Length: 204
Image (cartoon, rainbow, N blue to C red; front, side, top):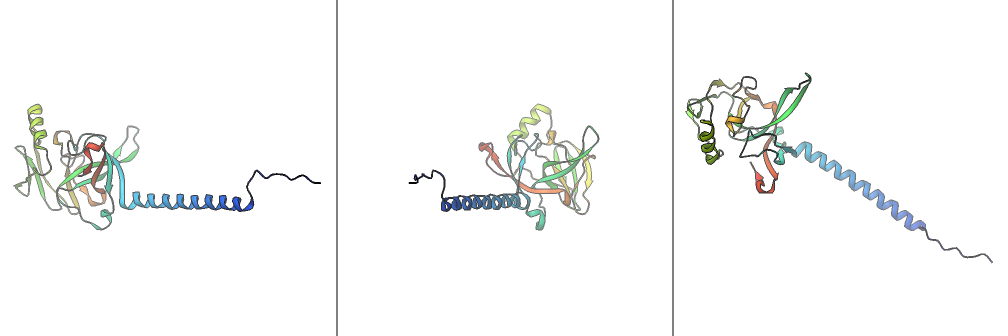
């Protein structure tokens, strides 16, 4: 009489269920990957702030997201924080692109000038109290003797924007001839929503 052999493996029904679950997992993974890629490339893009040009509005090494969907249908607004694509030359002579975080000060056609610690747009002094930390401004003036550096009048061209960092003594921006006003096509994202550190959580 033949001996009965116990089956410690999977029967056909279990095996079918296993492969179905594996296939479902792959489908979910692929769909999730596509959604994440679409989110990153069309909606929000992760950015890490490098340097202190926007301090204390955005601190060095802060991590968050910038909105890139507006670049497809929106128009830049004065005083808006933007992420800018800046072409740079590496030490080996090769070309690359960096992302800079700045604030729009001058719009197309504006004349922007810095004199006597004040920024003028079209001959009128602008009020920057809404976004500049006055305690930090005063502290910087005590340490360096100034906050806003003087610069000659710059006429912003068509489809151009004059941008500056909030930390004026430590920001390379449109005030410098090597940078100048940026083109609208250089705008990579609008605003920065900070996630880390948690103490800085929020939009800017």
